[in-house]
Image (cartoon, rainbow over all chains, first blue to last red; front, side, top):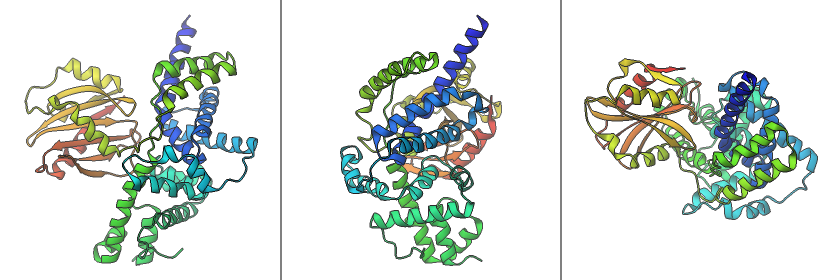
Length: 175
Length: 233
């Protein structure tokens, strides 16, 4: 009986944790995959894996990086399994257009479309930094890069994104 | 001493991480100061662009799905229940841009105008404890007079919404455990002035007051005082 109560409490606690993390995990998966349906699948699958591996989460304060690592692996697994055909980025943008179109804010819609065009190697560290609040050292650790390489990717990500958005780049340093 | 190229490269890598050396260069270089300004404006838009709306799946929809996962009752059942939740709640995902954290905090203020009373009467201790207990924290008495305490729904979480009385009037504090930020950010929106400060390992604190005359330094002092007074349980 005591074991069941403990199990229920553990289950409820983990469920609450999943729910609190879900919005950020969905956003992260969306910007990785650039596909809403795929992002939902990846997050769903990741949560199941997370439940099975929950004993490896020793500190709830570290839950976000723990979940993100699971999502990144699940995303890689999904791509290995499905072997998606190469797609034209403009087609990808068009496919998500009704969703990306930011009501009353064309500027944001353009920025989102530009993010779609950014290669994954630049998009991912940028999302980790701006959306997930990761430091450069944390990004380097998650992506298995040196600090200098992580900084270079972040530098190139913003530089390319600004160019794609038609920003004034006259003061930008050369790559 | 860093030169312009080094400063701008570092700013492009992280516009919010400005070292003392970078700041010293920026303060004496008009072009780099202009560049830093441009990047900060771009960064605000980028944050909003990335914060796409997500379906706000109610607990009652998620719980059966997760329950089935936990009980290992079969993958088809899991898929079906999650699919239902996604269909119900997912239709609005990404339909509108997500506002910035500061904008959400300010929007939340409009829903509780009664919180802004100037008073020296503290909220009953039991009410304050209930709100704080829910978020697993407590406050040292030196925080000052807390005249208002509510556990508010904010971005999918219950968060403590407190009002601390100061010599300059009431100041609102929201303890945003689920909203980590990298650096302190001041804001001035819709008649509210405030700051969002990072709290290592515990998300962030949003601290704001009403009125154009609000002194940003006063707000920062309250933020520091509250942060020092919080005991994380």
